[in-house]
Image (cartoon, rainbow, N blue to C red):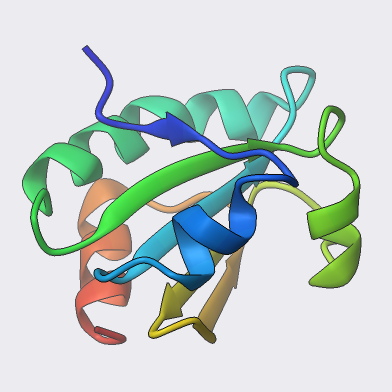
Length: 107
């Protein structure tokens, strides 16, 4: 079972900007090969960092407003938010270890 939740433009404010924990948002699309390759990595990271970071996904095709707001021009793009503020950005795929190190370095 995936620990990931799916965001929408409508839920972004509450689920990300008002979250008590840091939130990692994966901007993706079903047609994106690297995005599909990142999916199991994100599942593992969500499980490993449960209780420390909320891991979420946003389909850019179904939710165009938020990616536009944050200037998402290529996917996968990972944005890390803490206290309602964008704290880090990573574009492209990462290994599980690299992703965990990147997250831990920003929370």
